[in-house]
Image (cartoon, rainbow, N blue to C red):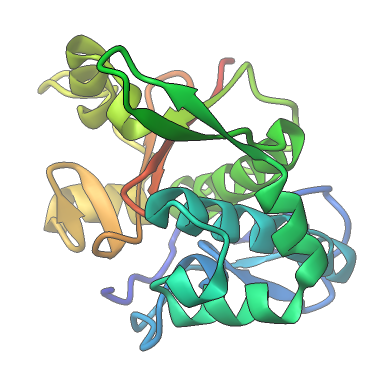
Length: 237
């Protein structure tokens, strides 16, 4: 990723983007490295957080990363998992592996075949997505979104219908008269330069993580994790 300096209101850097507490120098990657593969991209987005928040999401993030990989490969067996860091987590945590195995069941298709259905722990997934969305809002838009969002939605991206998929993949601020982000914010600079943007998305790592962060009266954050999970978080004014 390209390095982009932030020229928005830097006073926000003194406060944790998740709880508003004094950061005291603790920083966090957005997205977390557990959602990516080594070698990691250069210049990963980094935000200011407090130490408790920096440590408090790690188990949920590991859970979500493992759930996505297991759903993608169809098994919680570490030997069947493609990503090396996820394989290691599953090998080292039998409790997590058992939890994931207990969350899957078979469902019959209309043609008589069967498919695996993974039942996520919704609140854990929501916590991680909200954490990521707050990080992107801060890093890209210079906005600290401490309030609860109006919308937190997520589902496997292949389950989005045609019109839903088109809406999700497009930008909420398309058009020449659309409002622009704060002058000096990274999102504004990306619009001007096009750095890291592919069809309006910031691609952190191909096939692993991409996101949009837009401001059009409302703060809209969209994310795609592992080319599998589509998520949208919205804060209305």
